[in-house]
Image (cartoon, rainbow, N blue to C red; front, top):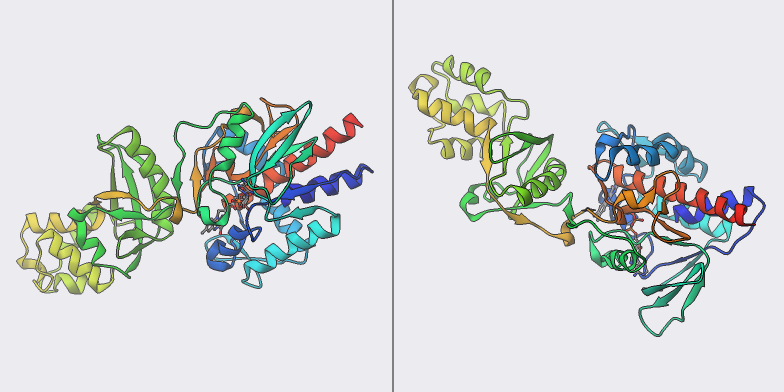
Length: 408
Ligand SMILES: Cc1cc2nc3c(=O)[nH]c(=O)nc-3n(C[C@H](O)[C@H](O)[C@H](O)COP(=O)(O)OP(=O)(O)OC[C@H]3O[C@@H](n4cnc5c(N)ncnc54)[C@H](O)[C@@H]3O)c2cc1C
């Protein structure tokens, strides 16, 4: 939709009026906008930087983001009547707290500009045809459509029931592109191994923690501090979602890579060890009460082999050190991730090296543009993935208009 809008706007400025059609296989276009941010749609972030993304080259990501910044997203939506507000986390939401406002604004703008949305129209295959393409439907309810310029904006594989089920990778490959060796869920909850059932027993507890991915040799590979939610299957919440792609990626190359939790967020071993030594008559549970939810504190004591009702002076050096270790460096064994059905985004995709970041145009096939999550870029939690989609859609839209102007 963003690409359709920006193509139409740029064409209008150039005095040309091409037919712009969006084909969407889903019964509801923009399903992900509606589910995003718990139904409020986290449209962008107040500060978007290339380091907020993983995947393809930082330089290429930077180029795309620079061409349509978060400030331009805010202005774009304001112009459509959607004011955004910033929350403490830096996330930007519509002031209405309703994702429908965002989707309606895009649909109305498509309508105003004559960008036609045809749905449900599921693409089955795409064949090059001279300088353009013939798009074949996946069933006989629709008939093939020809186009001079083609944009692949099929998304990745996250939440496939919304319509983004990975078909785009097949189309891209058929048109000469490659797809990264690994396409895997990102921003995905993690299932804890049966050996660490105690974590599942904490279901419902949410606390601000630091999650760290370590290599088999103990090297820190990634670290995120945010809310961690214990669930009946394991770990969820923004901190876990952020760390998930780094954990899964590390695990692929290094089977000994691990996930370690600092339940206190910024708790430091020496400092806490020191504090515990000066507890005197105060109980361990009394000390922990100021720092952690009671149920979690109890479970951590149990794992460390420490009686929470014991006064500080009664616990041994070994017990004390075991407790501090459990607090700040608690290893949690992960069985698996929860898969694309529960993931918010896809890691991997069409390599950025195969498109020109100044235009989003394919370097492989003529008159083809690729945007959004289909590319090998995934952002962290906070509005970064939509910003990538808005920016890429804009860059492609302007480039398509340019190509039409040049070719007359
Ligand atoms: C639960 C959830 C919450 C999220 N929350 C946020 C958030 O708050 N903020 C944020 O920045 N990001 C969020 N994201 C990520 C964000 O939604 C995506 O990164 C973004 O929507 C990607 O945009 P896209 O246009 O590339 O693909 P999509 O939004 O996935 O759109 C692709 C479209 O292509 C259509 N399509 C696919 N294949 C075919 C085919 N063969 N024929 C025809 N049509 C086809 C689909 O029907 C779909 O409408 C969330 C994702 C999920 C799953």
